[in-house]
Image (cartoon, rainbow, N blue to C red; front, side, top):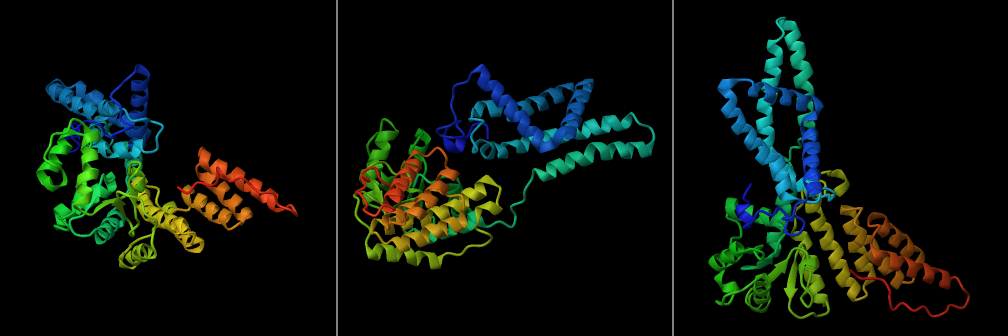
Length: 416
């Protein structure tokens, strides 16, 4: 956890985690840790554990062990939060850091028990001891239990990964998958010996990652040295994608000039853009009957960040397939997939925007205005959505005139 050796570096996030600290930033990270820790144990648990730590320091025979244990707690807790230096205001920060509280909480449980034991020894009446035990222990356990969620019966990540493997052809390459996808598929490869022919390439940012590619998939790169990550990626696009079927889990990761098709949950990479064909769309549609989904695939029913992220891959797949239909101006088919995306994630702003584009192109300006407003409701700072809304309002006003004037839509609705 501390060295992040599986990533080849210390960064918890390739972009947001910054190795640059200020006094204000360290104070913010410290405050964020203690607020998070308070949410794990509650006020009573925090006080009882602090008292137990204080009493441990008062025992000469345990002093050295207490100092070492406190050092472990500090390194795994406040120090690690400061080292990660993630932006405390980002909604991704808490989910990223939450797994690293396991060691911190295990150590704190020891001090909590010591604090309760020390307080109980001061009371000689057994009945009062039980009262004190209940006052100190029960609120802490209730708080700890409420901050813990069991995922024993959740199959969202597993089903997503299994369905993605159904999409990938033999010897496929998945370019730079996100953590939920990469960890899920790698777990299936290691634990179930499932689809070990698939190459999961999320190693472009470190020398360690480059060595992984060379050692495990030597056919993906020409045998020449590379000076930086940019040269490595350039070689990948011009070499590997011509030798193996290459896919991506999200089209936004592709650099300019690289195109994609849609096949179910994943996107085959194309080095040269081409318009979608009926055969391509038919093949994409045929993937969905092969998939199996368990549980409630609707984001409002899942407060957990990573579960919602897993569900959004399915919603995004429908939304992106709708865009391919929109390229062919098959608006009703596009609209059907946007609606399916919203049935999974009712807050997906891009789906409302895409519905607005379909309405605008079909001259349903009232509905276009409504959908653009919904897109802005769930993504208020999006300038493209705001521009689309203004254009739709103008079109709605002009359509009410007996003689419509021509509307310049050169800056018209976005299609992304």
